[in-house]
Length: 257
Image 1 (cartoon, rainbow, N blue to C red):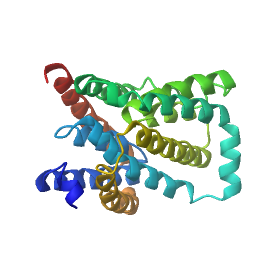
Image 2 (cartoon, rainbow, N blue to C red; image 1 turned 90 degrees about the vertical axis):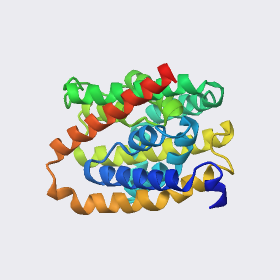
Image 3 (tube, one colour; image 1 turned 30 degrees about the vertical axis):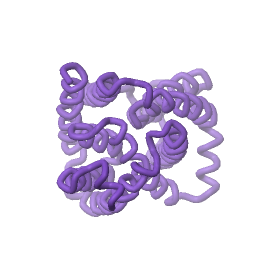
């Protein structure tokens, strides 16, 4: 705990703990937004690099939990189907992660704020692709994979473009949940390796990320237990509105300091 309190005071750690819990609950209910919530929430009172380090292990483990619900054969078939997306996404994510330490804090806040606000507004606008609107091909896999990887490496969030693409190519519900788990899980593993190399995740920030595993996993379990009690479309929209407010606050900090 000494390592944690060397970078966050006890009151701020408690706030980060409950942000991770809330992010886990939301992921359990609607299946997305953990990195966005943790990043936008923790960045309101901490350096964005610290917020990025904090979300790495919770994101890795919760997505791993999603993958292990399925058999190895299904996982392998999904990897083969999306190998171009995964390969290009992995390369760009790892490369983009190395830029984080050299970007100014204000620029990083602007990148994260734009990503959070832009994705949330896009989802709320109803302009996201309709199911089956596109046909999967290697060119699209490479293009969307590269975009998701760049955004993911800089901000820890590669979910929104991934979900939009899986929906647009008409992926069935079970296959989509499995594909999300595989893509997010491998992406989170690469994010961890990339930011260990970049220095964002280190012996000082790793204990914080480990500590936030507990509320994130418990929150995801709790969200899964109570998900049937909510109108998921309404809850999803409320979550997106909260993310927009968080993203706008990050933009304010990036512009005005």
